[in-house]
Image (tube, rainbow, N blue to C red; front, side, top):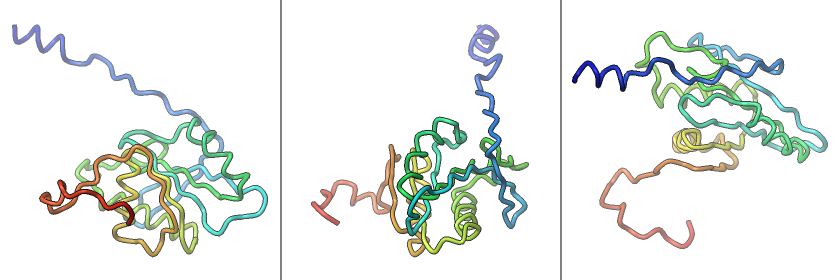
Length: 172
């Protein structure tokens, strides 16, 4: 029975979608030697003050052509847009030691990326895990962020769990 259960529930193949080849993929080299794949969409028309950085979901969800096409209309409003595959995803490097995949690593990567694009501030758009990453980054580096858009964020719980039952104020 144990053998049968093992055979039934052990995956024989993993349904991992193949990376979509994009000629637009460029690379940043971070201080720790990690290579980050990204796509840059240049602003069209009158440029806005701050670029947008899109933070994808996952972890494990790389940038897709769908993400690029969905955000491309913002270039017509004057926004430069950077969509990058976070470390361990898509066209970015995988780490040899999986214990290196930490929130600290991801927030430090984002900080280095903001430094590389030489923007005084950025607008972060975070989806799912990317929304949680945006919040983590914002909590430590608010001076670098002009605005944040969160799409399907995970729970943002208070550190003091007793505050979880306190009603949220009408305005912040």
